[in-house]
Length: 218
Length: 218
DNA sequence: AAATAAAATTAGTCAAGACTAATTTTATTT
DNA sequence: AAATAAAATTAGTCTTGACTAATTTTATTT
Ligand SMILES: [Mn+2]
Ligand SMILES: [Mn+2]
Ligand SMILES: [Mn+2]
Ligand SMILES: [Mn+2]
Image (cartoon, rainbow over all chains, first blue to last red):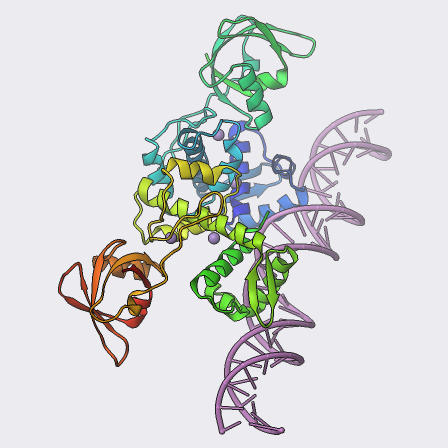
């Protein structure tokens, strides 16, 4: 099996691969994990040895079939524990990510499946991300963000791209959660700021960075 | 905070201290953890640095007030997770120990207390061991074993001293669980084997090692 | 095409936590 | 009291996963 670090790298690579269809470079991984690129190069070597990834200067890092499978199961565990922490233990959605970051590494053959059953086979985690099934299959997450919407357009918040508590607390303050309806009133050309109406309420302005962190359905 | 290894050592020392009132030596710790005595000496140094234990050649290893407190909270987490795994996820009592061994290290200020509440503030874990309260207080565990009983005596299984699955599965096969009533029919002088009657059933013979692993109330 | 900047890699270091082998200290026998 | 055995400790090594500093490779400007 994999070490805690290997699992965190795997999951990170998986996320970068899902997010953007872009080339995954050592620097991108380093940035995402807050590690030094030199350390990443070491781990790339190790994961390549283990046949979980392939690395090619041109193509960047790619997950092998096995790597994808393993990464998916880590994500499954992470999201299931998040549901547990929120629904059963009463945590708020801005507190659960870091705890799940530890719990996802608990190793037992049947744990995830039992937890899944106990939770009633949830489809989505509290941040709107789809939970992979035991067989690895999962619903596809929306890839359009609030920032992609045209002025005047209506949408529904599908998920959040950022799980830091600073972002989630800001959302809470704005009364936005998964499912909230938002209309994009206007895009400010100068800096991409967005004027929005939350659930038909008064106009409010948010940054482009904010808009890019909110995934939507139309 | 403490590392995973430090926590495992702390808990081990705590258990040795509870079990026997005896002197806790490096060799005893090494044996209990399956580590080399040399490694134990290293860790004794580190835990002493951190003021969690005191070590004196004469007195052996002793927990400081802080060490006791910290150890108790690890035990609390371990036992609460065991209850969760058995009651909520449907594991059997011989499967939960090793998983809880990992879960006890999840770090979050309010996790144990929320879990405790979610489980309905259980008093005992599935092996009959008392669960420390948030303030560190806990019921005292029985210290008499089946092997201490006099021939003819009656008792009730209070807890098990050994949590290996080989022992627990043996108990299950014998139809013994927490609360089961046992009568000690006879002690074989030759090797200390015990002839017992489980819940008034037919006579069965078990080893002295077995008897020493079953904690009883009278 | 050169110059410059950025990214990737190598080489060497460090801490944690384990180990083995050798040595010293303490306890037990004779 | 000496001899022997057991326990504790020291010294040195290894692996993992991080780091910094130096170097090489690749990309971007001028
Ligand atoms: Mn993690
Ligand atoms: Mn999530
Ligand atoms: Mn443990
Ligand atoms: Mn237990």
